[in-house]
Length: 299
Image (cartoon, rainbow, N blue to C red):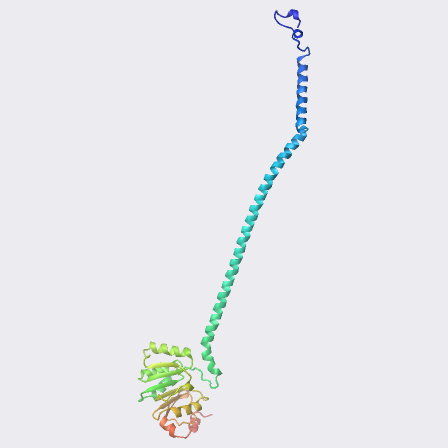
């Protein structure tokens, strides 16, 4: 714009000293200068834009790595702790199972061992007689034998002894008839059972039972003797009774007679036969009853 055309008081571009280049050109140059300056400043501070970005990312990564590693370590620690806890639980369960199995094993062993001990304790007294030189097993008396024994004791009184009393039925039956009855038995189970049975029937005052060997007992105090013997023991018992019994005693033998005594009375048939011997007869009589036995039990 020419100065002549300007109103009064206004200055032209030339008068003001302003550049005469177009505005857009100056703006472009200014932007270029600003861009170069910023680029130079950035390059001077960080090297270059790409390098700075990489450095920043790397720094962020470097700063984040410790945190990631710490989080990973913490997570792994928790996992390991969980696995350790699980292993501890499994180990405890395994120990409990082993302990339970061990306890069951001990219980079963104890039951089996206790059962064997009880069987041994119960069976031994019944089996040991077979191992002795003279075997005297327990064979319960029949009702007919008990009746025949009581028949041979009619009109008699005083004390009575049953040699090998077994289950105690002869002693208890004699006590009911008024005798002071005693039974000797080597089997403790039979003795305890006999005592219980006498108590249950109210005869425990007149019926007594003792655990003893017949060869270690003296029968001199008894006036009535009952014996359920076997052939092997009868000769030896015969001599013992001859030495110990008084002259007014009576001996009642069941199942097998004495080999050298002559019976004064007999009753019953077959296995229920009972022989009665009076001591005044066998003490002064040297006769044998072999012929009598052969007639009663022919071969």
